[in-house]
Amino acid sequence: MDIKTIKLDQPAASALDIYQSKTDEKLPGIVIIGGGSYKQLKERDTERVALTFATQAFQAFVVKYPVLENKNYSDAKTAIEQSFDYILAHADDLNVDTNKLGIIGFSAGGQLAADYGNEKGTHAKFVMLGYPVIKPTLDEKMGVKSLDVSKTVSAGTPPTFIWGSVNDELTPFLDHIHVYTEALAKNKVPFEVHEFGTGNHGIALANKWTAIVNRDRSDKHMARWFELGMEWLQEVVGIQ
Image 1 (cartoon, rainbow, N blue to C red):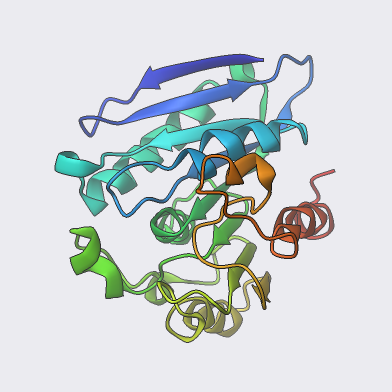
Image 2 (image 1 turned 30 degrees about the vertical axis):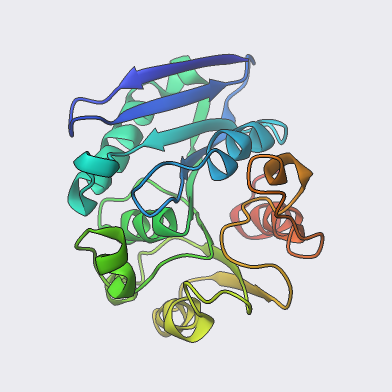
């Protein structure tokens, strides 16, 4: 595997980490948007998620959008757009099947991933959202001005897979996931949702692999989201 980082043109302090498997055939691609409330990009849901998808024969990409003193919701969106533009422009060199290129986001990164998926010119063929922020209820806490992404869902939104926990008090089900799945249903967008009765917010893969960098937080039941997501990609999106 080749791992490298390329700087994005705009905005400042943004980059794209590339986890490229060496292969003679084009593989599905996954663009990963980590959480962290714009204070940092959590390892638990960036590089460890990238390496996990790589084991499933994906080319994986992590968007390093601006955080801390550079944080800005619109700039983060720009970083995602430029990342997709770069991947499409270099698809042959990166061995990416652009017809099987999607996006996954966690928490605040889930809001950004959903927003990109809802764009009219999105290049994402599928969207995966882990305990996502949907409404701008956390703007003051995060120090950004975001959007209610449930209001930008349309019939053109790609098939979407969502999971969360009933124990999540940061992004409660009724205020976030429920609102978003309602919008998907109204627009007849194919989707699947798993609201686990165990686990909590911010546990990424929920297994030992992410627990060792996440205060030993794991949950065997909620960890099944990854297996379920892979099955969904096979059945709904056609990724084998």
